[in-house]
Length: 610
Ligand code: G6P
Image 1 (cartoon, rainbow, N blue to C red):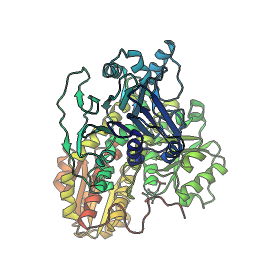
Image 2 (cartoon, rainbow, N blue to C red):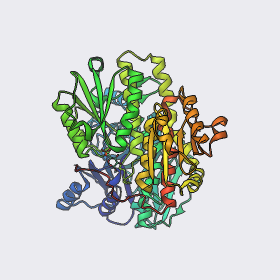
Image 3 (cartoon, rainbow, N blue to C red):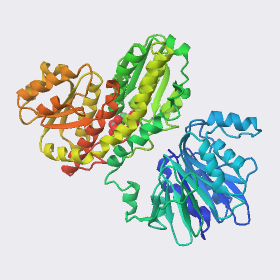
Image 4 (tube, rainbow, N blue to C red):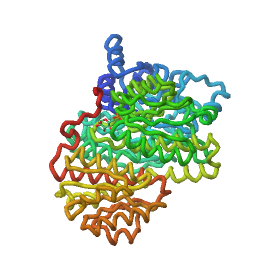
């Protein structure tokens, strides 16, 4: 995730760009840059590694002025967060300049082609290929060159391009990441999100996928990829600045729940190639030798991240045949743990700054383990002390209750399991192919669940008066029961307990009566019948049953008081789907009870002390 801005009009461009980037800093903050152009034909670029303040300081010390321009705040994917890799990128002649949000999957092929034509690359980014391609197609009409370039690209992108030879024109295009065009009076704005635009205009075009817009001070012309003009009238947005930051949602938690299809897609893209049947986890420094010499994998984390680790264990043991141990970081660090020779310890952490997780990582490393992390914040301590890192592409998570960080951790863990399985010779090419195919459908299936949010809100209304809840599941659904219960207790302060369904008879069943809803996770799997029996046992004791089932499961519908459904998928993927209705259930119960959803009492987003 990155933030991009563009401006054409009568104002001094630099303050407009910096103001916009400030409002987009939540989308990335490892480097930033602007390109400023004058009608007379000059083009200047300033870029700085680190937070936006570094760029601002540089521009204060050595100001730039101009008439139109573009800006970018980066969240690194390809290439380290250095000044050379910061955007904007320019062509070799220094006449065309571009900012990009997204990932170009075929950039290595494109780069090789351009290099054989003599183009010299100055960064490690996938983005740089786009600007060189535009330059190679440029014959005096920027939008034409951009359209031809888009035909070559595979992947996802939102771009803004300018040419010093065509004053007062920006060309922008989208395939995946969001793009908003703010329509002003003799001035126009482009941004990744609404907040940068709101201070200037409330008339906004939300550019659709596959479209290109040619933006000048006087006009916004939207076309399809062939150049045919498309009707895209502006809409009026009446959001106040706070609502705008939340993307129009009532709470950050809801916004982040709804961002999951994109966040999961972004975490997979550039790492899995369905057609080539390839998984590329380069940043992890995992090769066949390591995969085959590993004695065990230790997964460490706290809270929601620990739950992700628990899911990871099922996947990695099954797909890679590798023993996995999962520990809560706070327990591991003080247990005087045994760490076998050739172990790898992998920390799961959204923030990369959780005190217990960092201590557990150091403990594991001190005992000889190689260190990996799956983390959402580049440059955080966890990423700095790790030998290999997989960055989740969730974007900043603001709500204390973690949602999109969890599903993106799962996506990364699944890829890790597949890669280990492949390198350890446990999975055939066909087995990997089948799974990549199913995995690529998951973001769309999460979207399907989100479309039914109103139905889940209605269920929440009907259960919000209960005082305690039991969540049960087996196999990969057990950690989801734990996570569903945690979501509910964190934000609604109701007592909720997650349990393996098979343990019901060893105690929790004593709790069940008509005042205790049992949220039972029973999507289709080899354990379906067993969980269904546990549900019937609860029903026989007057428990109020909330089933979570695969769509079309009439049997479960028959004895559930409420049913939440997920689309049909390979059973091993069901955690990625089943958690979504539970997040929504917790959210709507908390709203119903009038709780402070985004900042629940006594909790903190990042627990940096013990
Ligand atoms: C806090 C947060 C949780 C999070 C946990 C671990 O308790 O409220 O949402 O799961 O810390 O955080 P981490 O950043 O290490 O994933």
